[in-house]
Length: 456
Image 1 (tube, one colour):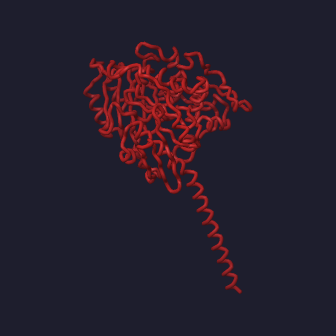
Image 2: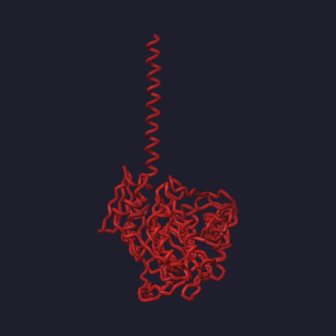
Image 3: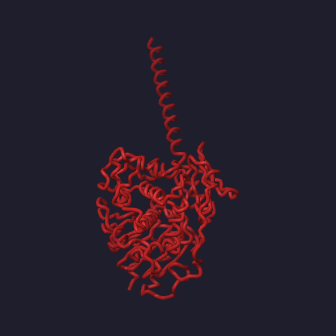
């Protein structure tokens, strides 16, 4: 009797263990399945841009930029025939395509043939930058600015050899508007386009400023989105979005399946995904970083301009070409809206030109591009940011970099893409493309303080 009872108990325990095991396997498969679009979408999109926009080699990109976490186990196929990249991991697969003018686009709920039929507007280059002087052109001046060039050479060599605890692909410094340092890793040069990541947000600031200058936007008025009219989201203004105080629920964690990773690698329409989020805080009262908010701004710009032809011309003709940024590519999502949160590709010189625009209060080459007062607005802290954030630019007013002047403000991107603007020292500093390991974080405070020390 006792033996029979023991067997029943043992069978019950084994059955319970089996059920738990099956549930664990099922949950694990479900969770991994939810991650597969991100695990395969990231390398497909990144590699497609790197190969077809930046002209890099697949093996070099995979060894340097994609050698982490699950991403390093993904198998990617680059097709030169149709300018695409297909990435596979387990049962997951993602494909990104390259189109002239648009750069790379990850296919999500989009027909490839339909997307390939969309053509970027034909825009003739207004000039050849190699025939014009800096800053619009690439003929660099030989005049001096008073900065210690020997020290700058020392700091440049230190940076490019990992001495500031990071790995820079490109580095450029302007003093008084003149290039005083420029260096690249052997794989790159002055013609290489580098990914902006969130530096693109600051470009959205500039485009918003041009919309204001043209009289098309009042940033203090609610957007009036039809989807927001039934609740308190109807009070959200462009200013709220520009200063990251929309109140919309958002998770910017890049380490797992979060709002930002789902938006970038699972969604077709990044702005729609964001504006459908519920309101978590009263708009204008709480600061928190949100890439999604910036994509709402870019879609709103697209709607305001009216036609896609005018929309795609806008960034190129009203900003990039005015600055001499003839290399710049502004990539869209699968719905066609340019990804102002993350996806601009440009050369180091072009990023320096952008910084110079802000150093010169919105004027470049004698032309006012941003409205008067826009740079002051840009560098005014958002009300809940504790002096750390203005309008799609980071600020040093709270002393985040303690060895650097507090008037410094910057465009910051994932993996260390940086444009630093230091008005009191007449400096623009560009660092691009370093790929840090978990235990390596670039010491930008030391780098910038060294550069400042070279000014006589």
